[in-house]
Image 1 (tube, rainbow, N blue to C red):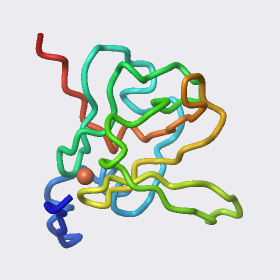
Image 2 (image 1 turned 90 degrees about the horizontal axis):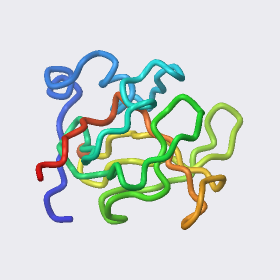
Image 3 (image 1 turned 60 degrees about the vertical axis):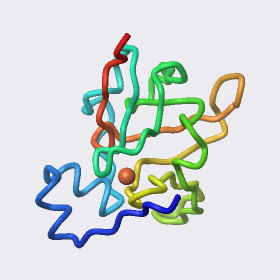
Length: 133
Ligand code: FE
């Protein structure tokens, strides 16, 4: 994408709540079962809380009972980026917004059909927009 967004930490701090900043710009993790979307099932689209990039659809959301909103696929693969994450002594795959680099969460291979993937995403990195039909 040609419209990559870069901002300073100060600029992000002015746009985000402290929790949103800690998760998206500092690779933080909200506590399980505390975010606003883990038990949320309205039809619509989830945007990057930092830049508005369309990341996930309610159509691929499923109840993983892990305490974070979970999806089996991104809305468009080019809207996310993945990278190996060896922090905390684990071997995981980090998921980021491809437009602004926001940390979103991780993807695991224990998801449901048809992909077998589980995108385990922090509510604090998302902004839900109801389907307008
Ligand atoms: Fe973004």
